[in-house]
Image (cartoon, rainbow, N blue to C red; front, side, top):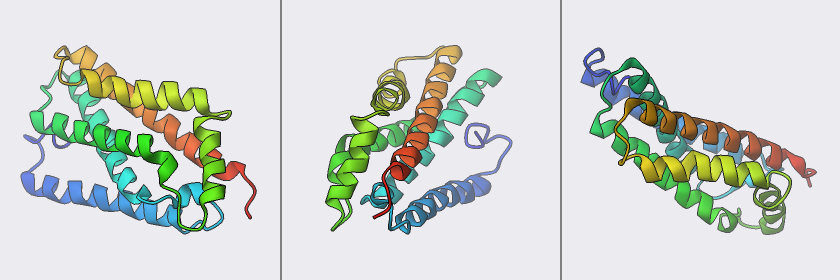
Length: 176
């Protein structure tokens, strides 16, 4: 949002905020990896996926907020938003192959809960289709502010649902 309203925020502030947001996302991934009893949270590249999710969150808030404020959404904001969506999509599609070394069996069990078990409908319809595929597919085709706001909102809802499912599925199996 600050990037979109750069007339109110200096470039020096933006140059500081963007890397700090990325580092915060990385740190969260590293913290999750410390939960040795939760193989779903130890998956390879989680820190990078969280960086892509931070781009989605920042881009979604910027697109939603700027559209609601009647401000134009800059091409830079759209590019960062799309980068986050594409990177996150790649991680979603590769999820079954990112198990931590030596924990493949436990990881597959937790991963199945999220993508094929009781959480599958919410994961595929809300987090995947509504939260990533639709915003990514229509981001560059939509120019009406209300539709851009809708795409930003869809991405934010999808991200919130996926994170809730990641925590639930990660905790669903007994620690062993």
